[in-house]
Length: 289
Image 1 (cartoon, rainbow, N blue to C red):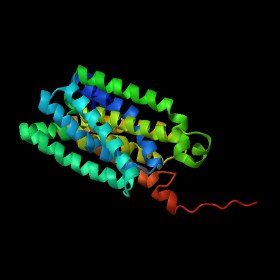
Image 2 (tube, rainbow, N blue to C red; image 1 turned 30 degrees about the vertical axis):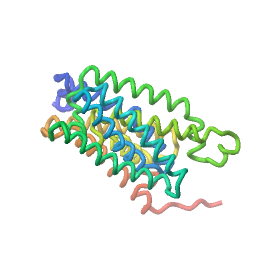
Image 3 (cartoon, rainbow, N blue to C red; image 1 turned 180 degrees about the vertical axis):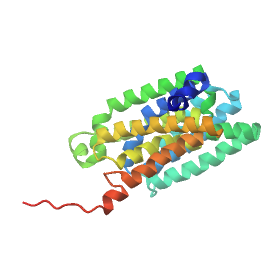
Image 4 (cartoon, helix red, strand yellow; image 1 turned 180 degrees about the horizontal axis):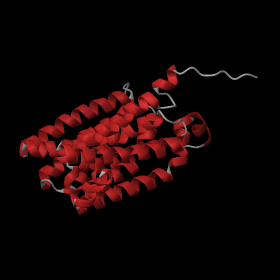
């Protein structure tokens, strides 16, 4: 009975299997990026870039309606523009990068909502903002799998300089000039992955699938490799639990996936051995020489 309850929806319904595969692809590529965003103290940058995608997706929608290729290309170009533009503003003016990202993100969100509302209905706006993971078709799954694969390949190529730039940027700058292009490539991978995320979870929720599993993993370990593996595990578990809850409760799948990841975060916040509440309040034995 328990096995039927846990696995029945995915065995009996193709749309549930498609949703699970899509959500797992997002977790596989997005969660490791979220780990580096946390370690680099750029947690809100992913949120800013995810909102920056909206105007490009809206322009794609104005040109071709709810066309997956048009909205993807538009969102990708807009995401790169926000990532690169905010960096240029930070270097050319007195503003720090977090302030320029905040300005770009607010303007992008407002512009995207206006563009979609100018032609579409409230249903179209909700579809773009919150996605429709249960409606993923073959073309969407191929896109998610392709972007997930490219993200993982790109992350593997820049992994060594990215770890050095994250943990000891001074040392990296003393032995190599890879810091600037590594940072740019990292922002590009974030934009690419968030474009994939908005297909399933929308521009407002895609960053949640990237950040919450990574934040949870940070509370369990301080080792970067284990942090990445745990973040993927938490992302997949959140996707599975959210879809299962959505099926039985009849509620929107995207928000429930994020809430399931949030439950894992709350558990980690309490029980995580690398910074959770119980770890903080539990007396530690002192080493004796």
